[in-house]
Every structure is written in C-alpha cells, then in structure tokens.
Length: 348
Length: 264
Ligand SMILES: Nc1ncnc2c1ncn2[C@@H]1O[C@H](COP(=O)(O)OP(=O)(O)OP(=O)(O)O)[C@@H](O)[C@H]1O
Ligand SMILES: [Mg+2]
Image (cartoon, rainbow over all chains, first blue to last red; front, top):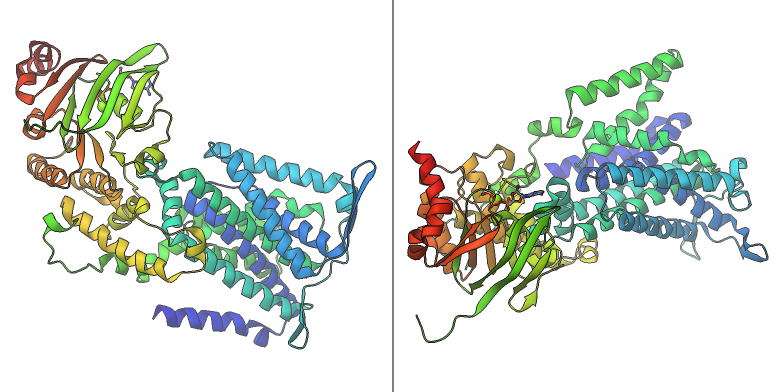
C-alpha cells in the first residue's frame, strides 16, 4: 500500500514536464525543488537534533559559489605576490567540490558549536552566514562582489561513447533536481531511521539522558551538521548551474527563513514534512500571483496562511495528518516477537 | 562470608563536591563490590544525587578519586563512563518524552548497536539484520522490567509508575555492569513498588552491581547488602542494613527526623 503510493507519487513527479506545457511553471517547480532539498537538509538539523541552523543559506550559497568558481576557473592573490590560478574544471567536479567544501564548513560549525546548544547554536550559525555573505560581497577578486558570477556553465555529463548530456533548459534541469531530491531524501531517510538518527533524536529530546546511555552527542551533532551542510551545498550548486548567475544575494537571510517556514509548516522531524511544506510554500507565491492580486496582498495572504498553519497545526501538516494514515513505525512497534519467553529469562 | 575476598567494582575515595561556597559532599569514601546491592541513604540535601552526578561524570569532583574496575572515572564524560558499564537513572523523571516506549529503549541500545554512518548510508546487510535484533531485544527488556503499556505508546502519555520503569528499562538497555538508581520508586504506588523490588532482584540475578539511592526504608532494608548513610555531605555510618537501622547517629540524622515528622 505504502509502496504503491510511493511509486504513484514518483510517477506523478516524473510526468510533470510531459503535461505541464508551461515553461514558466516548470521553472517554478525547479526552484521549488531546489528549495525543498535545502529544506530537507535543514530538517535534518532542526527536526532531528533539535538545533535550529539559521545559517542554512550560507551552506547553500557556499555550494553555489564553490561549484561556479571551480567550473569557471579563477585567479586570486592569496598574498600580494602569490597568485593562485585555477583553470576551469568540469561542472560535475565543481559540484563535488561544493559538497566537500560545504561538508567541511558543516564540520567546523559542528565542532565550534560542540558545547553550544539552543540559542547559542542559532547565533553561531547566523554569524557564520553573515560573515560568509560579507566575504562574498567584498572579496571582489574572487567573487566579483555585487557584480555577480556570470556565464556559469551548465552541468554536462560526458562518458565517451556512452553518454553525453548537457543539463541546459528546463526539462533537463527539472529531472536533474528531481533525481537529487530523491537522492537527498534517501540519504536522510536512511540516516534518521538508524542508530545515528536515534542518537540525534536523543540529543533533541534529552541530552543528559542520551549521554547516560553512552551516546556521544557531539559526534552525532557534527555528523548531522556535516550531512546537512553538504546537502544544502549540493542544492546551491544545482541552483548555480541552473540559473547560471550567482551573486551575494544567495546568502540573504530571507532564504533561510523560507527554508525554516517550509520545515516548520510541513512538520519538522518528519521525512515528508519539508517536502509538503516546500511544495505549499514554494508554489504558493505563484498561485497567488496567478490570481492577479496586488503583490502586497499576496504577501499578506502568504503571511496569514503561515500563521494559520503554525497556529492550528503547531506540529506541522504531516504530523497532523498522521492519525489518518497508518504509520509504519507504529506497525513496527506493535509487531511483538513471540511472547512465550518468560520475563525472567528474557534478557539472558 | 566466603573465604575468597570479593572483588571491588567501584571505589570512591575522599570525594568532595562543591557548588561555589557550598560543600555538597565532603571527604566521602566508600566502595561497592561486584554483584552487591549497596544503598546510599540520607536526609534531603545530604548529597546523594551529587555523589551520583560525580560518579557518572555529570559533575566535576572538587577533590578525590573515583574508579570503576581499576579505571579512573574522574574527568571522563558521561558517555565514556557509560561505555565502561556505569549507567545511572535520574531522580527527576527523565525519558525521551516525545518518542514511543519502544523507541526509548532502542535509543538506550545505542552501545549495543554496531552500525556506523558509512554502513548505514550504503545499507550494508548487517544493518537491517541488527535493526531486527535490536527491536527484539528492546521487547525483551520491556518484558523484563514489566512495562505493560503498548510498545507504540508515547512515553509522555505513560502513567507515572510505568514511566519510572521505562527509565530503568532505558538504563538496562545500555547493558550496565554497575547500575545507579536514584530514587527509582518515588511516586510509585505500593503494588508498583513491590513489583519493582522483584525486578531489582532479577537485575541482581543478572550479575549487575547496584548502587541505590532510596528514601523508602522497606526497600533499602529489603534489598541492600550494605547501606551507606550520608548526612550533610559526610558519611556518618556504613554497614549491614540491620546495623544501620540501629545506629544512633543514623536514627538521629535520618530516621529520627523522618519519624519525628511522621509522628506530627
Ligand atoms: N546544581 C546545584 N547548584 C547548587 N547547589 C546544589 C546543586 N545541586 C545540589 N545542590 C545542593 O547540594 C546539596 C546536596 O544536594 P543533593 O541533590 O545531592 O542532595 P540529595 O541527597 O540527593 O537530596 P534529595 O534526597 O532531596 O534528593 C544540597 O544542599 C543542594 O541544595
Ligand atoms: Mg537526590
């Protein structure tokens, strides 16, 4: 039943470009998809370890810049008389660099934040995002500052004789983003349904108790920040090679806020939450615009809807729907092993 | 007494714990032998929980040494101490409230589990196998401590008595060789308390050494091999339960105060 629903859902997603017939709407779907990936990465931290990262746009932006710079090549003076020149690299390599570099940034944040939780974690991540934005804005030689990086090449995959695709145009990019989203979802799903995920949840629920049963909470917080940052970085790289121009605005706080809204509205700490929240709050602005109401009214409606969701469904949309759908974990938990072992021998 | 000298599991030597100017524990020395049940008693504020916190790495010792099976525990983090087999419960009810009963215990099985991130992400076959084993073990622990609530029930919706049992179940999941219980039956009704005493006997039959903090004298006298009595941070008496019951200092400091209150 569940598997059937998954297949039907995927079939629907894969079919969208075939019948949508409107390139602008497909563009909206692509951007929404990229944001959903970023929201999923945020959910890994916020929903599972309970730590709110308000620097998620920084990982996203770093991913975008690293991948763009690697594929464009650059020259930069690291010291007044030490010029480093990097020749343009294939885009797939740039994207891999983006994942690695953002993963390392996540590691650093996780380490710095090793003792700070809650509000202090939020502050560390906000500061990080602001520092990165200022660097992107002011390090003209590397980033072109506000002039933006232009003519970023699209991703092309070439295996001589086998494969030669360039992800240019909306349809190709839609599928690229869809595949990345499924991949990210799979990675996060495996992680959170395992010992590692349980350790993260334990940190969120009760850190002292988690430590008392031997969980190295710092280790799992770092694992979560690394994975979260790397996935956000991949989303940023996808974005850069799709829109093919990147400026320091990718670091804007509003993008992080958008991700937070998607996660919280959809349901933090659930796998489907960021997807549902992302679809609604990603497509909503377009839906409102198509109703041809004034932009101010659009944003007011957006805001009211957000408040309503948070007020009426404080846990988010997905947890609110859960009682209506039979949930797998529930069935798992009720599946008892044979009950004929006397209690006194049960643990031997 | 057997001729063979019992092996020492936990030693606490000249332990002092301070909160700023306040000395919560002063120059405390005692030891627990393998397989023993030792109770730490004393009036409110005597320093029992503070001693637990120092032993399990939640509080630094201002002075003194703590060792388990020959390994010094001072300065180790709680999770490292748990890895050495020393696991505690908390006086204030402490569970993973937003998780189901079974998930609470699965979290507790962390040290038993061998999955590492690469194996998880690449879905090595042993991961799925282990998940199945863990689920079975979790159910076994559930039965062992005698929790009747459905496994899929949220911990936050458990009645108080079952909640206290769940805490013990989570601690047992970490496979302790030394279990520290901080007032495990406080808040339980008499039936639950009686059942818990049976569970304690079964825990002991598993060769788990127990250090118990408890105000309920029936339990303390019923299950302990030895009793250590604290008052205002200092040990005022230690010995067999019957000796402690008769010790004048103990009666004055602890029982006296309680009975006096009960008489009013
Ligand atoms: N975090 C803390 N900061 C300051 N003082 C503390 C702290 N924790 C405990 N104390 C003080 O240390 C002393 C010992 O407290 P502790 O909790 O160890 O007592 P206890 O024997 O466990 O008492 P109870 O039977 O009430 O649980 C008390 O005077 C208490 O007020
Ligand atoms: Mg106490």
